[in-house]
Image (cartoon, rainbow, N blue to C red):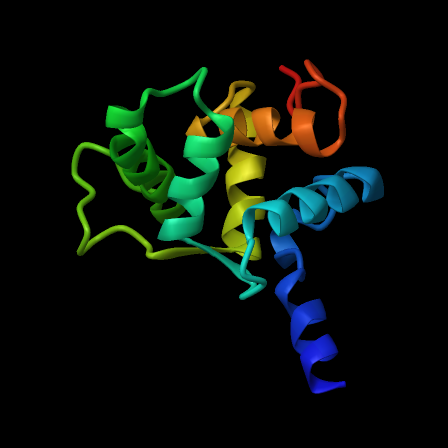
Length: 137
């Protein structure tokens, strides 16, 4: 029971974002988060992030750019400029709350960020609906 309760707590949407997404969008984001969190820890760690970039984002980045792209995603999660983020200032793991904040930022800016571009590719594989963008301007 404690494990199930802990897992449910992983998927709590931050209060300031509760009205920003429909129930269907929240289900879709939870499914995407679970696809990224391959070890079930409740966070997307750096290794999982690099793995999903390599697996799904070959159209976005080449093998030599995976680390740089991962640092860009971690910079977004840290709300920092990718040019100034390094291993000491970037977040190490992306929680569901950070994940949702990144999705919200992509939505309000009407454009994709590095993470939402990656998630669009994953979503096409997970939901089997290629070309269906997560965000609309």
